[in-house]
Amino acid sequence: MRMTLLLFVVLLLQSCFLFSNEEQQAREAILEVRQSQAGDALTGGEYAEAAALFKEILSVNPDNVPAWIGMGDAYTEMGEWTQAEPAFSEACERAPASYDAQFGHGLALQMLNKLIDAVAAYHRAMSIDPMSSEASLGIATSYLQLEEPQHALPFAERAVELAPEDGRAWISLGAASEQIGNDTAALDAYLAASERLGASPELKHNLLHAYARAKRYREVVGTARSVLADGPSAEAGERMGWAYFRLGDYAKSAEAYRLAIETDPLLWHAWNGLGVNSLNRWLLSDRVDVAAQSEAQNAFASSLRLNPNQPKVIALVEKYALTQ
Image (cartoon, rainbow, N blue to C red):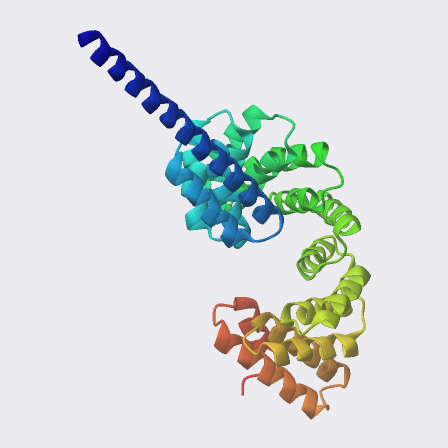
């Protein structure tokens, strides 16, 4: 009797293990299907659906690193950085040697303006894959946001070296060079970027400033015209007025300054430019062009109202008695 009872217990336990194994296999099969569905949703641009599927997977198996990375990627595509960052953080904790986890974490941290932490994460990604231009670019752009161009420069150079066809790398190199005062290198980098990316509005503005610092006045005019073709820009109008004045075309210079002021009446630099042109026209008329004198008075007065701390302008107004 005891032997029969013992045998019954053994058989019962065996059946429990059998059912347990079958249930485990069924759960694993379901998870595999969900993983495939989540990957397809991510690839197909259904990011919210992908995130929900990855969340379901993680509720069953929180150690599934690809699911944490997939969730981070889905939230990244949606621009939901506060959701992406903890997902990548979980992935990094479970798989510190994963490049995708470390890089994704760096990007999320950078977008959340946690720049020191972002640099550290990008460095970890780069230690895993030293040939990653994206990690170098991430470090460079983070340092540029931190206003540390001297630290950004070597990583921007590395990004360009690793991916010479990546226009973004050239832009970061241009920005770093510009901020450390290497105007020639900045202009060359921006031109290289424009060859690869085309002339985006942002890149045109960068080129506009680079040409101005290089005193390439005709290129300033051409680039300013291109910027203005995209839409109103007080900055482009002011730079065009400045370049035309240096080229000796005072009528076009004044016209450009007026355009800048019309776009942004608070741009005191443009008021000064218009004032100088009007003063020049008045003096060339042997001081008989009353309209030019009046325009100069109004322009300088407007500039000084916006920015009273301009000793040179004050001296100019006093010298030619241009007080209103």
